[in-house]
Length: 294
Image (cartoon, rainbow, N blue to C red; front, side, top):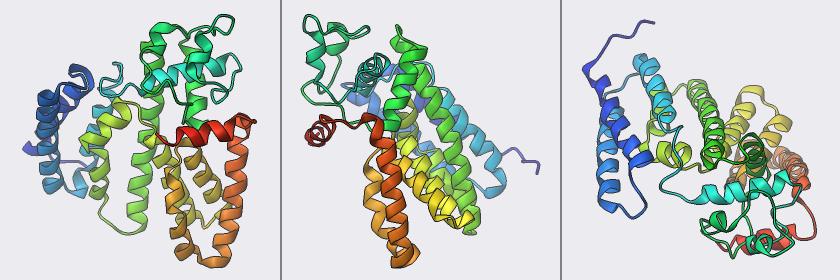
């Protein structure tokens, strides 16, 4: 279907400007700039939500992709979590479980690890805590450290590229689920053009993007395929990216009924255990539980 140009397509421009300011031009303490950029972005975002139609979705989906692509090439500015990602990635590259020791241990004489030094340590926001990142996140850190062992910028680029691809999957799953439930597909713009989501997930590398992908995939498999096993495995992967999906488990009882829900939970437990198994050792449970205080 050919899309007719509408003047309000230009609302993507202030949205882009605001997102780029937040992704490249501000620090955490620049409150005025942050407030102004978010005000500009959300103003454009709200107008788009009011004006957009389903027929124009190719334009808005392309815009959502370009907004994320625009943030690909800078280090996160509003979050310092990436430095823990780099730290964990280098440990995994050396075959060391990141849950084994606190970061300071690897600065001691005789315990040094390539890529870990005082400069990186000083960037960590919680050096007195063990890492909190589950296995799928850790696997991506290891991949980024392998592809870019010496460059923080390169490490960031690898992870942002992964998040960008994941967000493409999120867009497809959202649109597909809305069609299944016969809802307006423009409702997906609530997520896809939300400047907070764009900046925090793609720009600042928060792993909710990966969690959301596997969570949506679990719902899609459950609705489209009627498959409890693949849905349970997808949900397990969501937990292995971020622990938050655990709070949604009670809703599956209503959806599936008790008999199928018990089977779903059993398969989910097995899948989650297998995904966490590579990191599991004597130190893992204590380290993870102590860090959840964060």
